[in-house]
Length: 161
Image (cartoon, rainbow, N blue to C red; front, side):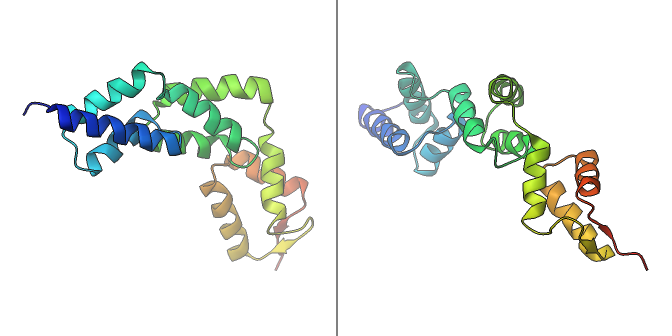
């Protein structure tokens, strides 16, 4: 199938409108164009077109994404979300390291704030509550040793029977 000038024009315009509203990854933009029914040739042409102007840049996207979420989400969670959005894992890690070097994120402080939203220092939790808290924190990408360490610092422990 050959790309008609009309489909080429429509795909390029659609791509420009999509990135005008919000920053997107290469994969995100290509997926959206495919969903809108454009042929693979039209999608590739539109991607090449917006890249030629520098409108799509996965490294820049990762930098913005990480900077915005640095004090809100854990490193693991951010890297996982970037990978799901189509950013190469190596690019995501490299950008994380560069950003962390400049902004020095404090994962333990973030973990402490996350725990404080649910429990105050010195809380005694039953076995079920402790498992739920641990699972909640693990799903947010915090490391086991950090979770146990911060819980210990905050004197949050299981009720003794």
